[in-house]
Length: 516
Figure 1 (cartoon, rainbow, N blue to C red):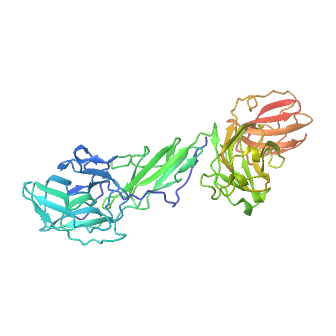
Figure 2 (cartoon, rainbow, N blue to C red):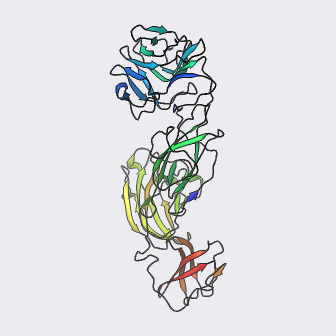
């Protein structure tokens, strides 16, 4: 499968979780920091090993835990990793061994992220300090937080008057059975510096399903920011691989990335799921089609490897919608670029929720080598189509020369038809009818060979069809109704070695052709 390198665009794909991955500080003396780390799931305090500051101890009662964070948008340093939840009066969370003795200012302050419910203003969060873990002194919140509808969220709050001591204890508890969450604790020598946040990275191409390997470029709009990433779906941290250039992927995976810069809060986390499908075997074509009544036909173009594009919106399950009132116009055409072998699909009838009113359908499936001359593959009538559930149709054998498949609503009286789950079996090189099977003929060779702009091949008095394949078995060019003396234009063909195949009344002949 051909690699595809796509240059940076400005389109953004990000799950906007504000990152708490060791944000950088500048212009202030931070005496203590804790961002609660990045737990993989809700974890008991006693069992958790992901603390940022490992020189102090963390305790709590048996049910106080570190929770994975949802989106936190109240302040620049809020966490996309973990936070401690205290949601009743019997829970508490304590940090011991904090050294504030290095403070040079008279004012030492504790800052933390606080997430509250709509009705709360933060007054039920009790924050206390102790120098001996016996006598505790309450701290008063410096901020006034809003209450009422729409005020749920994260806020950066401050508790002043922290003592200077080499072995300080801080305890958080709840005076009511309400949910309060704590994150990104820091104790600073003076006021906390207000930091900007690094922009969340973007990736090109965006997340999605692809039918070939992709080369992923990651970009951050913040100048000189470093990007770290993972490819296994885990949340990246400061130890994750440093992005240094395009990443080529050839299998399904989840990319996550964040950006960091000294003196700024870390960015949000980019999350992008990539699905890479193998197009050398059965391929399901994903498409949405609707409102066929507005155009002569809706067409799905399939690029190399049986790829498709999405067109419009349709039924909730992604099926194509054929309007019975527009018989002859509701047409789906699939354009193939390689030799197919078999076709199957699912079909279902609907009519306003009343299956008994669905009638008179005539659904014709055809194949063509040139998109003009069609031969019927299958004809489905009302009796072939269930209104209760999808019915599976096929497998239908396709001609090796088929490059177009058409589903045509030829006649109808009442009801709509849904088409879904199209599956095409791509013919493998070496199959009985494939391009590797051929009968050599001494009658003639293509000329000139090597060829540059055109070639001729007077293989016999009449050659019905002529096809040019690359060495991987993909169709490059196709001609029908070939006559002796015809010249075949190859100006747009990439230089290289190809197989030229003719289907004649006397059999098949294959020759090599060099294009320069």
